[in-house]
Picture (cartoon, rainbow, N blue to C red):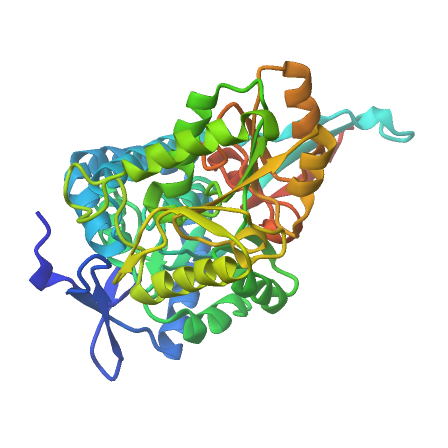
Length: 482
């Protein structure tokens, strides 16, 4: 069990925790009941300088020369330790993020898998032999390419998956032989600290993984612009992500940003399966996922039938205390977030939309909501809503719905439900997103697949293998034979 009276942590730099001494404290709240569950001591500008300098030194002295089998072993041991502590981590995720306990257990299980993928990936970083005699003058020469680590990686992570999304940055960085400075979300910082403790126990050298605590608006710029940081990886809102991209200038950058995922149900799709998938994809973690099912397009012949089935399923969802095993949906991260989402619903209704179910709010708890009669230009349709709200819209023809799906400057994931394999591939190819699920919902993600958006949904790809590749450079070695 988590002892709430002990949750007070500062930044962790070179294996040492920094608290007090003029640092501002921030309280961390349980999103469900707004109770204080702990405090963090915010990092100073001096802390930022120290942590990057430390990470650079440890990279040069230790990590860049650490054999792959050792990095792999550390990641494997960390996975084993996390699996042993799965119950404690799940409880912590529920307390700090408001995530229903069943979803928290799922996040911990995925996090263990990420570590194991990274452990395997550390031993699978391959170069290639290049046939030099393909070029005139290349006779009697050998060419070799190899992957080499970058150095210091700066990682900035969001509140919604405070363990798994942290590991999608930390685990590949370590697998590749880099060091990392993590700035976790100030609303969900404790899982990162406990994760650090597991890495330490598994044998990761001090200074290879560092954490800076505090407000993003104060810490991100000095971290991102530090000359010794070689790559920045960020998951969060588009408004912040593109500012970070501008700050980073000539550094490598990965941005995992928002979306308003289209999910298309054709008349020949399995309606019951589609309804179940949309309920899961629209209301998991109160819709606070960047690939949450938000825009639902249903072919007219089955539109009414789909809507009736959907509303029945949504009304059956159990909301409330996320620690309760029976709870399907808990709170949003803050009451302010719920107020904002409810205001968007009200604005849509004033513009002609109809609420079929939901729309109410109690503190940070927003009722799971289904809207119809919406227009393309309403915020609940054209902007990432990041709340338990889905908009259901009818369509007639394939070309029409492809146009609807692409009528956005976002493009992370989409979904297509149909039994027509030709149409499935045709529509998937036509939709402008980083990924498309066929007969499954847009929110689906596995931790080894390439994951990332197009348009304003980001730059680059995550997924352990792809992150490792992006956290290394290709170095060429040429050998002339005599």
